[in-house]
Length: 199
Image 1 (cartoon, rainbow, N blue to C red):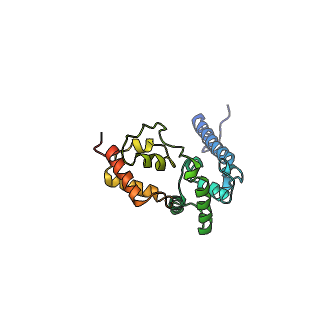
Image 2: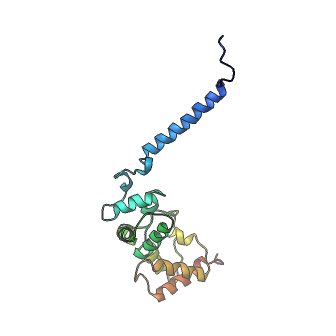
């Protein structure tokens, strides 16, 4: 049996095993990064736009938004230009790489393709209880379901002030969606039927 010179490091089976495991992790991470097309910051041109309708702004939205979350996060939402502007501005503050003109193009694209006219949001429980009768029921039925199912209403308990704040915010997303009187009627109905003390 040959002996190595004194002072020469000889790896143990355990240290060799740990080294191979570590190299396996490195190779695995490399392959994942390569498969995702994100190696060295490269993003494939066609992949991010999957699921987004064609139009001016699609590529901007696809690349800027997919850096932090899946595109499903966007395609599930419904909002007007005011609401999308608030959301895009917030995302820019969080690091989305869009200049002022690019942001304006993205907002127009989102409002055009994912506004209230695109159908209800693809979120929520999907189970809607019938709305109780009362003044404002028809307004809730016609206005709120433009953007989401009614489970988001029937599953909430808020005070009159909170409902007023919520309804005002929702109705401001699309210009002229509801008059101040209609907003008051809806808020009163919701507070009576789905207030914090309502049964």
